[in-house]
Amino acid sequence: MNILILGAHGQIARLVRQRLLAETDNHLTSYLRHADRLQPIDPQRETLIEGDVNDYAMLQAAMVGQDIVYANLGGTFEPMVKNIVQAMTESTVKRLIYVTGLGLYHELPAKFDAWLERSIGHEVMEDTRRAAQRIETSPLTYTIIRAGYMTNDDEVDYDLTEKGETFKGTTISRASIADLIMKIMLKPDLYENSSLGIAKPGTDGDTPVYR
Image (cartoon, rainbow, N blue to C red; front, side):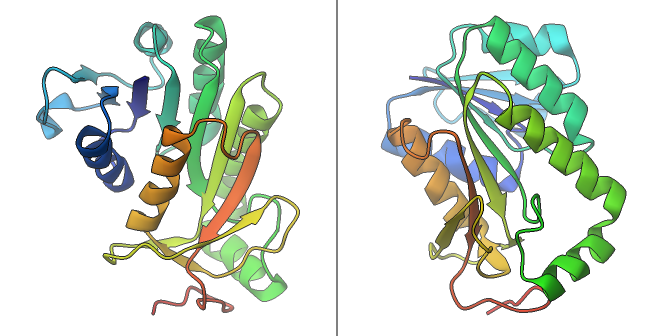
């Protein structure tokens, strides 16, 4: 398969990149704003593109021939997602894995939900929600991953919750998120058109719990 990683210098994206190159024979296209931040691990199987997701023409060109798009981005989300959805649709690329934060649907326990809204801010949360809604109402086959507060713990330990279920936990290792992404990439029909919450078991609380 051909896999396009948007925001390829992100910490989770780098974990996924390393695992894909070590564990599969897929070809990767790593798309990032400053390409000199990455060096090809396997030049025969990897292409680096210096580009911004907000640059629609460049983004659309990168979509050609891809099978899966994995987006792990920061910034103002709605315009980036608008570009991703449009470019994928016009390029007939169907499968999207999109990593975002928790709280899209007020799916958290009440005290944690209220803390999150205060901490992140209503405007940022609404941008995040609008971006997710664009994905969910698009013609794409998507998996949205709603991640808890992230750690760099060297562990893979996570519970998943579906949209409509109360989010369990508050924190999650980046290695765990990368593991879920790998499972989907290895079996792309897994969690089709799903919005998954991911957090470490036993980290429930009114604010993020690190243990």
